Amino acid sequence: MADSTEADRNLNLSIGDRAFLSLYFGSHKLPAALCSLLKAAEAGIQSTVVGTWLGLLTPEQLSKLDAWYYNRGFKEYVDKSYNNSGLFAWEQEVISTYFSGLHSILIAAGAGGGREMLALNRMGLRVDGYEYNPGLVSVGNTLLAEEGFPPTLAVGPANGLPAGDKQYDGVIVGWGTYTLIAGRAARTALLRQIRARVAPGAPVLLSFFDRTGDTGSYRLTAGIANAIRTVLRRPKVEIGDTLSISYAHRFTKQEIAAELTQAGFETVLFKREPYAHAVGVAV
Image (cartoon, rainbow, N blue to C red; front, side):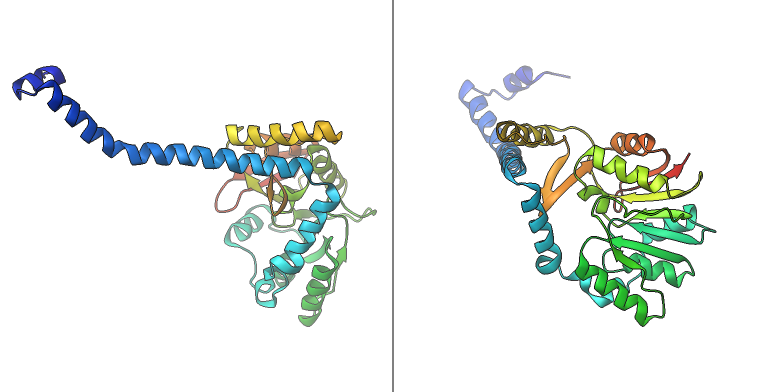
């Protein structure tokens, strides 16, 4: 096959013709190249903004953002129809596969307005739940009582379990709650508390935001946040920490497996779609 230079000679193209054709066809590639540059710039700006706020915001300010989100900014969790909507399809699949034959379930740390508790009670399970937002606790207990179920949703800490030793057949950390707990130490402490409440072989379900790796945007966010936190003498953030209204951590598969292992669980399931989740089994 003739190369491009030979083809140009066969067409009797002058230097000016070749320059014109290069400019013409090259211009068609320009929009895609500009879009790539703009997307990279946008990602960098976004990471810089998030990193700056992540460095400046105090735990108290993050808590206020979280309260605003649930009390004013996002009404779905207090909506009766939402809390009566049952389990998501992926949750139902996990329950059917890993929680089959169990009797007592704990919804830990973030039971919300009772969606999971209502669904599991309707399946004949005995369910307790903890939620740190008192308004959601009230909503959930009202809905449970309306259907004749015990109002067993109680106020508890956002990243732990209240004191006690009641045992359960399985535990679900409320939908998306694990991603809102700042710091690996705090997350593994919760998992250890859960491990103390279950027997070997008991399942725990976590759901969270995920990421595929330590990309440049996550490193930039963490670098900016930690530079600010160093000056302010505050604990550093982790790669994967970000803001989604309030604090959120995005996990890799390896991070989830490591945290479960550290707390005494073996990872038996990890899926990214349709909402990232993992199942650990107590060892």
